[in-house]
Every structure is written in C-alpha cells, then in structure tokens.
Image (cartoon, rainbow, N blue to C red; front, side, top):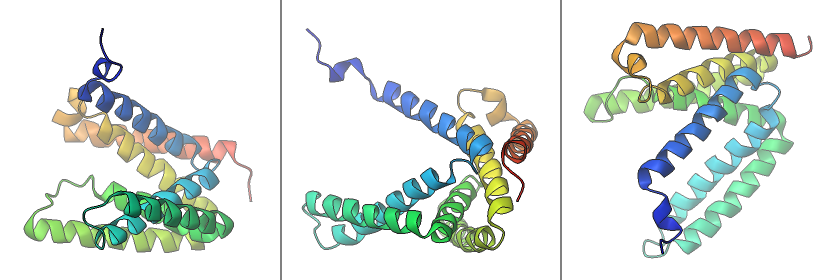
Length: 192
C-alpha cells in the first residue's frame, strides 16, 4: 500500500504550483483592474506575513510556531488595512508586483549585481506604487498587464524552450501578451 504523500513527487508539486502561478499571472494580465481588491488583500497579507514572520524569527530562532502565528496576525492586519484603505493597498500591490518583475532581470544576486538588483527592486516598488496612487485606473491596468505578462512568460521559459533560448522571441511574446492584456482590460472596464 502506498502512502498518500508518496503519490506526489517534489517535481509534480513544483509543476502544479507553476501551473497555478502561470494562471494567476494571466488573470492578473487580462483582468487585473477587475480583481484589484482581491490582489490588494492577498498582497497585504503576504507582505505582512513575511515581515511579521522574519522579524519575529530573529527573536525566536529555535521555534517556528511563534513567528508563524505573529506572521499570520500581521498578515491579516496588513491585508485588512490594505483592503480598507484602498489606495494604500494599490500602492502596496502595484509596488510589490513591479519589484517582483524586476527580479526577472538577468542580473545575478551576487556582489555588485545583487546590490543593483536590490536597489532597482526598492526603486520600482516606490516609484510604481506612487504612480499607481496618482493615476490609479490607468496605472493599475498598465502595471497588472505588463507585470502579469512578464511573470507568466518568465515562468513558461522552462516548458517552452524557445522562450528560454531566444531573448528576442521572449520579449516579443511578453510585449504581445502585455498589449493584449492592456486592450482587454481597457475594453472590459467602464470609462472614468
């Protein structure tokens, strides 16, 4: 008799996560403006959880339960704040996905390149977050379409070898998907 957990290999679990991630990024690309409140809630929770978890972990090195509980509490609190204060949530979400898209740049995480990549992530977070608050609808449409396309296509590099082997094709596909995402979002949202 085989156990339930032996049915799933690490590779299968990784592939399942990748499929859900690609689907999420395509939803972000094509329906980002319509789903922004849900995305704000999720981004607020994840950022709050990570901050709460890692700060608490520095005090409780031998115990993961307390940092996890504090992380969940801070995550729920930040999710509620981000959801209630819509523009704070827009700042957090748009800034976070812009910073995450910067991580796709072909820079290593070591030495000077790592520092440059970190500074670019922080700058993208702040600049895009501020722009998203200033020009909310337009910026949300542009940021969700472009970053959704970048992240989805970046994840598809492994199963679709041509995207990994040919940078020009990869960037052309990203541009085409981003333009399609912007078009769909502009056509499916009310004018304001």
